[in-house]
Image (cartoon, rainbow, N blue to C red):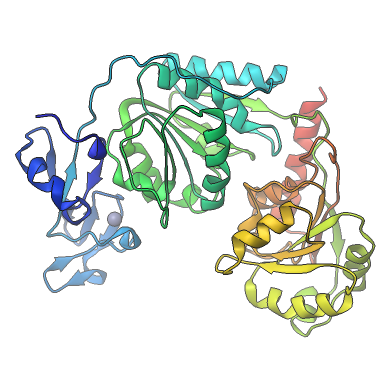
Length: 436
Ligand SMILES: [Zn+2]
């Protein structure tokens, strides 16, 4: 009996399997049924995410559950995971890429290096600066993998990145089926050979991807999560390859075994990365919380000819500052956005279309989004929510467009910390590399 394509490569709990397919699945001897959790002395380990739970903290009436992956549907020690094998595919007909652009010489070199790694069954780490054009560099790899009748996935820790990637991939591979999966996605898994998803969704795959691209691999939560990295490994075919894409250096990923490395220090338009300017403001956080905005900040945003994104470390602080900026900068169109804003997508769209002059945002817009003609200001850049990678990413929002390749990056702070210093150091280093 041939298993339904809609379940191939999956690792699911019984309740995640449609009842219409359950009967058929039960008879299928190639489906592997394993205990969802394994016990080890005082701990109980989840086999979906690899999280080690302490039995004392995750007990329920009938056993134990996994705390880490609870939001993906509860896994308990009474459950089983059903691992459904992949249907073997013959070599497919040549996959067409409809992208009309041309890679720069450097993009083409890296693109070829990634394809070479795939042929040699190696992993690949790409450090390409913000605005280098990473997505386009993947097109030849995607085309090759699909033409070989194999499966490719692009997973990223950020939903916004998925949402921006999907239409671009749809346009480039118009006659290829692409499946977009994230928490509240309108699509369900359909067994496609090309998947775009969040890294959380990888928990529902088992040895499915021949090539798995982890885009923004240096982003929270993936970079610090043993569980998401475990899920990614489990989702990959035994002899499959990872392609890690980052815009900042990352020691952990660069040292992954059997991994080749490529660096692209130059942006696609050839101009330098904007180097942040640091501006010291005494008692910045306290003053802001009392509704007092530094003069330097107000003058800068009022006089700017470009749109500004002002990054804030938290919603509470942003909500205090928002009405004051609205009142002070009356000639400017001001808006605010954070993770749970109801009109989040609408505001981002307005910003993209140049209908907002000043956008206040939390770190949700730190990466994956592209606006045309902007400057950015990080308010309280010395706050602990920012690290080197996130500051480099925020600076990288500026000057991404061929027609507007420059803009200001300003870090307001009350003391330069290690994150600020090393972010600026890395940006300067990459500019130097690009101009060698
Ligand atoms: Zn778990």
